[in-house]
Image 1 (cartoon, one colour):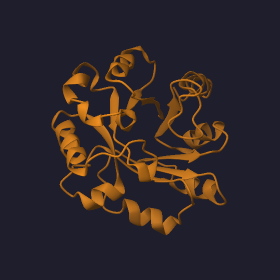
Image 2: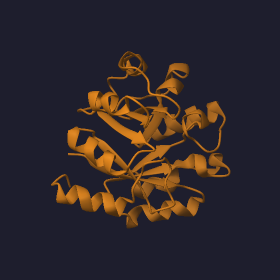
Image 3: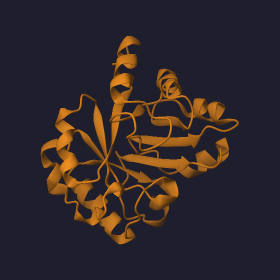
Image 4: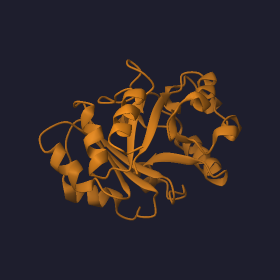
Length: 208
């Protein structure tokens, strides 16, 4: 059954305290919204570590603030040792083969074009041990056909910049995760609806 994820832009470490108040399956902590992501310490999520996805998104794939690659790799290793779920870009993993990905989310984002099926296959090749392979693609010609191809077990697919209801449609087709915003105006990617609205629709469809 699809899992509902609230994408939370963490602009202050105090925002982490919101996690227990949110009625969703998971909460993605987007640490790249912090002025100093390096100030984050894994001990801050000890009480909610089973409910979060930690993400430090690279600016080339929609992130806000760039970080030192060594620090990012070190953080993911610490999170892995603590059993915390995280989302790491496939391109980053190609460069940093020392970062564990088994049981985690491996992602790829395309904001300016729609890749071919072959390219997507190549991107995720070797990452079959991930919990979910996540593909986000801009809503341009051919995006629906591409995402429908990968909307199956082991994948989470989502369009960016289209009607938010389309994310529900791909969940119906088999996408493992649906990302939604904390509220209107707090989207971390184009095409997110508020998580309360997403939860309501998924419940009506019997998907929650």
